[in-house]
Image (cartoon, rainbow, N blue to C red; front, side, top):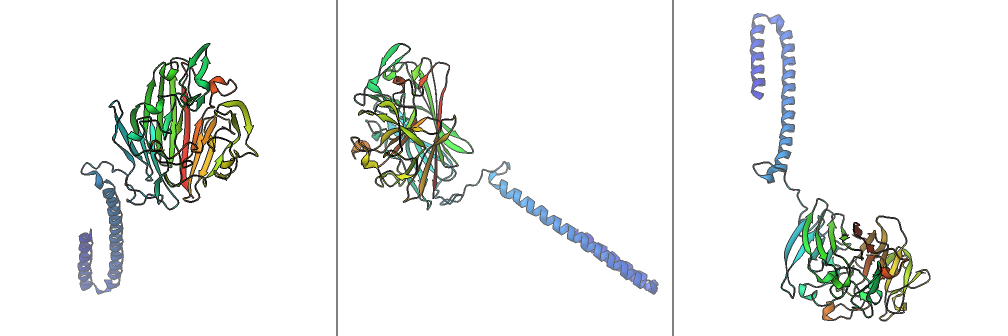
Length: 441
């Protein structure tokens, strides 16, 4: 284009000199023509120049977007934030995804895996298919520093003996059933009494003591693992073959989502929960007395000396169990008349509508970490780690070094017809969801 303009100007100069030489009166007319031609030439050059700049810029963008894809020019993978900081300013050392590795063998020689799930913001959740257990969960404090906030063991060997249900998926029936007995359709069933004199958390070999089938799950919004298990008819005394699934997801909204589902071929009690022990200051950092807790409940289930509900719904107002407004766990803990002293109570959630509802909020003032819990379940068990004694089978954690907030149906429901039913029948599907949302302030 530049060469074309040069030729145009040369031709114009030649014409000017010839015509002036033969007809001097035409000088002014030709000079005016020369000016017009020069203006047109400059307009052409300007148009070409700016058009060329735009074309090169757009082409450059295309090249930068597709360069990583190689010669085939397929779309490139999204670029993660630089190592060390995520888009939210949080510490990050790896991109979102799932990795699987060996975690050890059961006493029967079955290989067990551990799954490391990292979301887009650098939060890390570790799961194992032994007991469908949450091994650890790393979240940031107000300064972006990651720390594990759940109690547990670094190796499978810690989970094989009896332990405090650290991080476990609990079933077929979480919490207690009085004296290990219930009647269903005119037949009495007898269960293990592993929490003398009652049945606790599914019995001697509950869902926390079996190897589940694991399937990795990853979407644009979350990473996680689906665990599935068939509990055979008669296992721990329960009727019916129960097919159970639980999906643990870590979302890019910094939520740990727990989705339960189950079907059966005979009527059977079902009450599933996750049994994480939380310490928002970081596992092993000390007790949780300074944590500020709110529970969205105005009533709790009164219990007898063996922690079986009496059937009475008691008001929390005016009692040490009142967490209807934020209060430090330690403020009234020593006022609880129990042995050992502490909270181990089932709260009936205020909201009864179907769908997710607010259940609890916890904040650690020292680190700024906050956890909010929403659930489809009707109740939540608050346990303050009263029975922890610091033994090796408890990971060395002392009393009150962790707390549980177990969303669930009411304990001993199979024996208490006034409680929401926990009986699952053939043709029905059990579904419950709990969301733990993490933030810092």
